[in-house]
Length: 386
Image 1 (cartoon, one colour):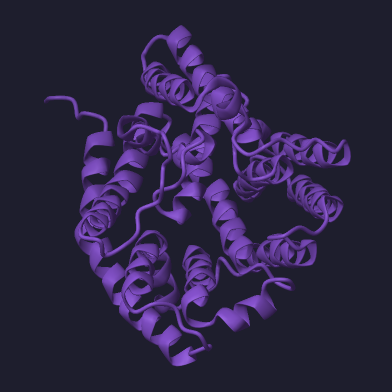
Image 2 (tube, helix red, strand yellow):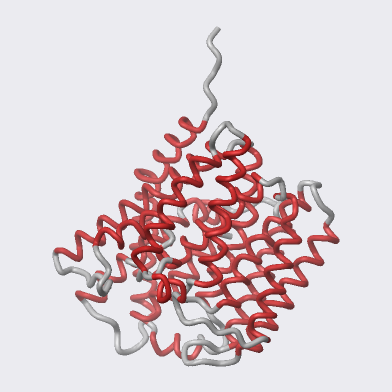
């Protein structure tokens, strides 16, 4: 599923360069970006809490996540900045924000929620991923992690309430009120302290660490994103829906309960999008179609999970993180050098994928795989001496 989601997101972004006319026709009816992203979030919700609970150790969980996410992220960001220094690509304008503040915001991966423009557009979803990690750890530490379905329903209902009540917040509302610099400083310190405390041996520190990470994460998602409030809440609800499905599959809950959660989240998400209406860069029809198809895709994959999966699909899933992070850099180089096509060119679109996928296989082999191996070694509990 991650592989399919990554391909759809790549098509969404590359279509700006190679198939702009087709994209303009398609997007009002089917939002390819939201389809891929919602599928990603469903899979994350299904996998991430299971990873934490399987280990039973918050420290091991964070080590695993850091070595899974950061090495490739650091490599891609470094290449992009180097290309920017050489005037090969155009680096975003960060306004009056200092280099230290921009670096700190990106280092936490919460930049989307800290009022800082994303160095690469795709990095905004990693801010939601990181928030989800913090929330999952918080629930684990206060022993509410088994309530995934209830959390999903509450978040989904709040999304409907917010859009029905007409609650419209400006983008990065907290940053505008408190200041971007102070918010970045607070969030960075709070995140480091939260991770350390939640990984400590003291039960009191563990609980404090969980709350210190989870509460700010929820506040930032709700009040400081560039995404509308209702959609931010739907994203979190979708992640916890994935967790609820995992619990049903493993006998920690019932399938009826998971199905009820799915119906509730779907109804609330569709209702929220419908009430939100159409905007300059948003059509409710395109969003709703993409969201429902993402749920259907996930459900179909779940039903077929015991069947043999073709190796190309599993291989694509293996390199999906590389595909997601590497493609915007390659597109930025193309846009700054060759330029975007004035007419649709399917051959160039196919050629882009032909270059991208082997490149991502290399980044996975030489960056992702070794770093994951190191992370597993560090996260492994020490063996007692004989």
